[in-house]
Length: 471
Image (tube, rainbow, N blue to C red; front, side):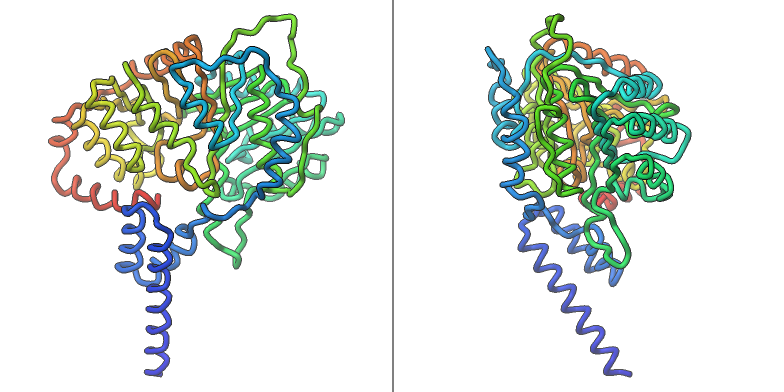
């Protein structure tokens, strides 16, 4: 028996050392690599299990072949996306070109946008769009709950499917972990094409649990689209606060492309053709020249596309950058850019909820908040409820809204989607959303960040911060 004991310890030691070598060879950010090494060192067995589930790096894996990407992009969207007299604003030309080069995120002019700051208005608009569908509905969501709202949306989709409308639904398998399979099976039996994103099955548990589709997209007939932060669940109606957009215009092509790339990922079916990229509706109405891009990011891309865009916005800002995020566990480039912008005199404001739905995340984020307060970033704590909104506004000329949190998971691990507007009117409207929320916030000063919490609490927050890359 003594021999078995030593054999077990030897095998375990080899696994741990091999895992540490793998982490080092991945050339991750030093903080993230060190966090995993500490977990493996000081949490025997449990640390190794956590790494298997959450730590493996898939960024270098090309889960979608370049040939398929060419077919999805060039064969479908590009041949229908001709735009005459497209002019890029000088102030944001480099950012737009960066997204084009990294992400095939084409800019589109002539867009209209409706802004929803509550679930009640958004879901009424979504149900209305579903009811108007005549050809197809493409819905991509991290969560669709088996609750009254989820059942209402599923009933609306079933009704359209029975009328001959093509309905495709992608849900995230981990986000919907607790949703009974019967909920989705009912939709399948009604003719809806339902796919779970990267299903996680025991005993095939792998790091797939760590790489989730966090996008919230819906396209109806290729004519109108929804994008933002709201999942389909009753808590987004009440009590949570969130922001979602409805867009009409050329940028719908960008949302459609994002969905069809995800569909290829889950179904290995290439969907393209004019019927999915139709001519724009209401041609008799002259749409304003609102320029917009849909930018996606994912862990298989060589670039952290949305994070790099945020860094550029912060470093190129001249007057202000206002940001809302439910979770603040910033990567080092984002932290550096925020501090640099604030020290340069830019009015940088960050709004986060007073209380987060995860205590561990709340504890970890506090040390980051204390750090950026020192550089002059204004911290605003939203008081009424949990604010799940994810938006950014800069210099009255640029704004973005989508599914991306300012944290490691969104920037590095998740499949995310944001829409970027290069338009004064949209920027001012989303700025007003921020200012309306700010009226319900408490401002945190530098003295408050340091003196109001006892030493043991600040020590605990700093210790939990070591786990921030893993949360």
